[in-house]
Structure formats: structure tokens, C-alpha cells
Image (cartoon, rainbow, N blue to C red; front, side):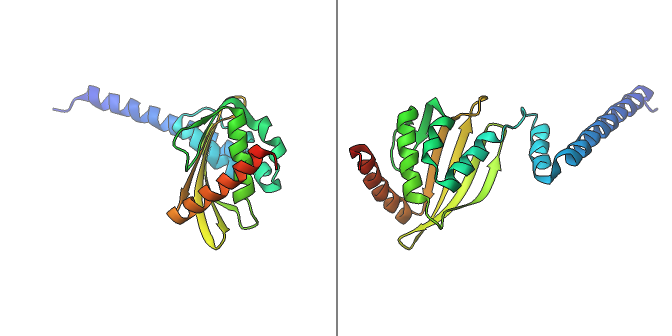
Length: 185
């Protein structure tokens, strides 16, 4: 004999799931029509992951700063307690002054005409930016992992590089650049 209670529960569950799908579809269609494909897909990821609203402004500011090679604006987007993770220094560098010193040096060393970001993975308060550049005939592939707080200031910046030949080259060049920055030349 068939259990009618189970059948009714299944029918009501199906109606609820169907109603949720309609609501979600309506919300997604509205988002798509309001903001175009790229922002729509970013918001879709946030909705599906149940994340908070995305704040893309810190990322836009970072890209502008890199494109224009604008080291003067760097302090404005760094939080006072920012932590920088270097690909060659074992311990994290803490504080705005140290992070600014390292990032300004990196902008000088890595940001030449061949520098370009090739991929981005963006979340509500963080981003992974893959980059490529060439220095002295060595192709450098790296990743910037950036996290910002609710006020849009960068609180964590990690750089990873490959291959080993590139790490050794960047280590030497960054050391020279940091030495010049510290000595004031």
C-alpha cells in the first residue's frame, strides 16, 4: 500500500523548490539586465555562495595604480595594520610603512612595459591576480593575493613567483631597489 503522507510531503517540497527556483531566476534576470555580463557574473557568484556584497573599488584602485605607476597613491589604499608576504622573505612584513616600501620597490622592479595581468579571480573582499612580465630575458609568472576590509583598504598582500630563476632575479633586483629606497637615492 502506498503512503499518501509521503507523497503529499514530496509534492509540497517540490512546490517549494520550484517557487525558490522561480524567485532565484527572477532575481538573476533582473541583475543581468541591470548591470551587464561581468558584474552580473560577479554578483551571481556572491549570491550562490551566500557571500556579502562585493566591493570592487579597491581592485579598481589597485589596477589604476599599477597602470599609471602611481606609487604616491599607494598609502591611501593600505590599511595601517596591513601585512605583506614576500616571495623571498620568510617572515610577514607588518605595517603600512614596510608594506608600502616593498610594494613601491616591486612596482619599480616588476612593472615594466611587458607587465600584464592575465587572470583574475575576485571575491567579495579578496582577489587573486595572476601576472606575467619579462626582465633580462626571463619570463616571470606570479600571483598577487589581495584582501581588503569593509572600508576598502588592503589588509593583506601576498606575492608568489615562479620559476626559480625568476625568484632569484627578483630577489636580487628587489634587494638593490630596497637598498636604494632606504639610502634615499
